[in-house]
Image: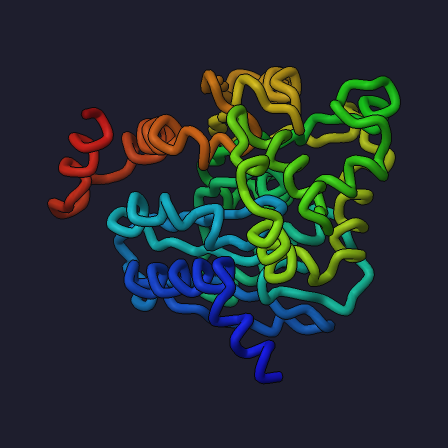
Length: 323
């Protein structure tokens, strides 16, 4: 136990996670777990003080790490304008269920139940990758509660036959699962190679990669496999419901996990209510690899139509971003 204690202190991943947790608290959010009943508990970062005059926004993560790691660099751009909610999806972070459901539809229902518990009736949403699947399902199931959607590299319109027909850069589902749920440094390097145009994994010592896996990738591995299998199983474009909300689709031009064609397919499926933005020299992790471009497009889409707020630091941030 003594070694374990010191290992935690020496862990880069654990320390980085602590820093994110500290920054979320400084941004005016608090960490809270909510028992939704029937064996389901969800964790969420919620405003310490809800401002009824502000709109609500939900930031939904994809696979990998937890919500803090995917939105930590972007959080400050939203907290001055929105009541921000950042949940851990089920089987990520501190959220879990004893129920057998694994579909994104169940994830969507659980997130909406969580939001209702916190008194949130209407919201916009940003969903990254798997979070986009969940966000799309929320928009389809609860159209009167969902406002604008941003779907980032979310292969919502993939079909099961795409994998069989060689559409993806993997030979079969097992290979895909071994990369998306890495359990060795080599597989984590593969994931980084698939996610970034210029991956740094090959330069990182295996110790750092093993540390990340130990802290972030060893919980609920089987359940996460089942989530991925459920996304693909019997998926057909004709069965994917239409949504009517205004949608911004953001895609990395060189995405090797969900090829760009899926972005155009999603645009065609949603129709005139959707706009697609393709970011050059970016892969699947476009929110991290091209964070400046990512934020610029989010602001243009989400902020322009919002009612004016009291003066804030956003003009200063904008001048910094454009320099």
